[in-house]
Length: 186
Image 1 (cartoon, rainbow, N blue to C red):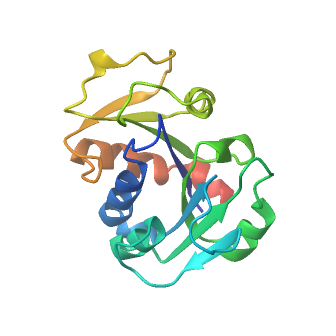
Image 2: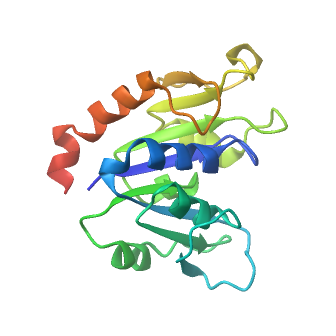
């Protein structure tokens, strides 16, 4: 089982577009996707499974991109329901989490940070995420020179669009997803 976490520098960074791009570009991994948010969406429960693909919600977009299953977890300042998430996913599922917070309670195989958004503010949760980041994604139009990030040893990928993962990045991802470290965790 591979666990990938996609975090973002701020609101509107492109995390959901990037997750959709990964799901569509790597269908052989048969991804399950989990979005963790502080914000209540509609009248959904704290832990909710999306069942219909579409464009209306981020979880529906995951399914439309090819995810096998998609979940929304709403957790303000309270603890994340990791036990409930694990029980729903099972032990043999490859999972992509869209969250900065999950790295505080889970040991993912890969952490990918998406840099973007309407402002240059970096969320405090992303600063701690950077300590674990294996890669950073920057939309080419934004440019690296405009960023003021703490030092990170992460590999940097510039993409034309968050939803279009480059061949170089796909090669990098496949190499890491197929590594023995991940196989041992399965």
